[in-house]
Image 1 (cartoon, helix red, strand yellow):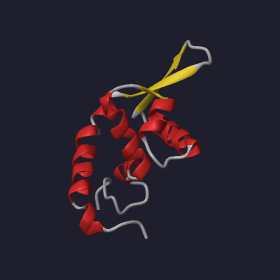
Image 2 (cartoon, one colour; image 1 turned 60 degrees about the vertical axis):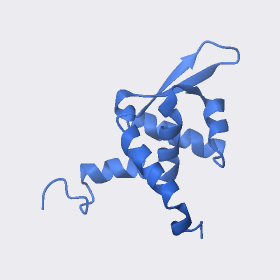
Image 3 (tube, helix red, strand yellow; image 1 turned 180 degrees about the horizontal axis):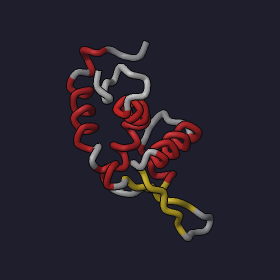
Image 4 (cartoon, helix red, strand yellow; image 1 turned 120 degrees about the horizontal axis):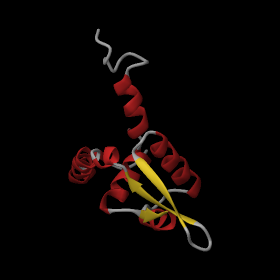
Length: 112
């Protein structure tokens, strides 16, 4: 087996998939695809996500190099989130996945 075999626990591709393969990560990347947003704007755009989960997702994507947090000199202090060049490179595959999900939503059924 090669070093990049996704069936191996320490495979780099598997580590990457762990970062981006949950629903909220994909939705956040897609949400930031049109440009930078403040936390409240992003939270408002994404229905059904709690503040805790959004914060955790943004931090995980930031640690992974996909999202950049830029503090804003506002009162009260705020921050803006944007995709890094690496994060932007994920937009095409995420967009394809989103279109596929929309096209097949009726066939897939709802949540269990």
